[in-house]
Amino acid sequence: MSNKKKRKARKRLPEWLRKKDPLQKGMLATRNMLKELDLNTVCQNARCPNIGECYSKKTTTFMILGQYCTRNCRFCSVTHHKPEAVDPAEAERVAEAVEKLKLKHAVITSVTRDDLKDGGAEQFVRVIKAIKERTPAVSVEVLTPDFNDYQPAIEKIIKAKPEIFNHNIETVPSLYEQVRPQANYEQSLRVLNKVAEAEDILIKSGMMLGLGESEEELFKVWKDLLEAGVQILTMGQYLQPTQQNIEVAEYIRPEKFAELKEKALAAGFEAVSSGPHVRSSYLAEEIYAKLNSNTDKA
Image 1 (tube, rainbow, N blue to C red):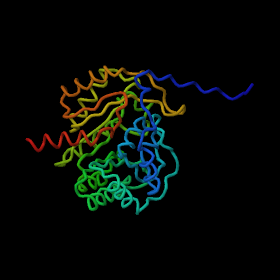
Image 2 (image 1 turned 90 degrees about the vertical axis):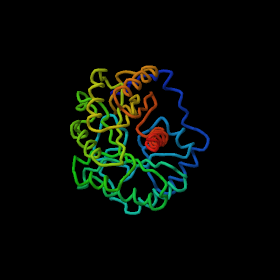
Image 3 (image 1 turned 180 degrees about the horizontal axis):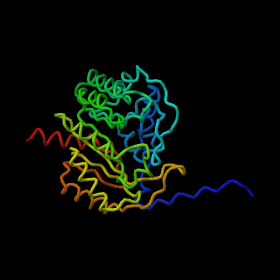
């Protein structure tokens, strides 16, 4: 009999979370093209359950600045390791992929790079500019780390004028020490508020549910996000990506997500995407198109 300590089995997924088919027609072509261009995506690195659906539609979320993160958040499957050198040619490859995929809305995220003074903000700027130069009609959404609240880094992003700035608050303050101990709730709010001071940039944030948060705590976070200037909110079910990650406390039913969406809209958010499989960039193009259309009509 082995003396190795047995790992605790992960909770079995409820039926409503087992419907995603990762192998959908057309996804391999997208995956192969991204591989040829030597590009990382959060879809693969973070084990997103929507990868089949998104890749089959020829859409993805590009993850820049390498595949290794300087932080080790307990909810995330992205590898914590000494990061790679910044690749100056990465921006052009992302822009090429955006053109080849014929995207109308490009979503750019990154690993956290605490080793860089500006947290990698300059690379975000390079990517935004490369996309705008190659495909001017494409709208750009960035999903950024907190840059350790380094104001010059945030100002670089603002000056690059992405259409949407997203920084995820992730969870309620009481769970930060367990879920993302190297982050700070108030700091994340300050980042969002700083960008909200700029004109013509939509502000977005996302949360994972099922980590043990109470509904009262959730409502308090909504209030904080609205006060920070957030207009778009995403809420999805946290799923334990590996046995090394924090366990799921609760699986929330689809009808509860629908109820929370209506409450969040009533609270004041302009757009809410809420459901078991929702992730930060899920259906991002549709949300932007809807809000942009409403702005044009105003």
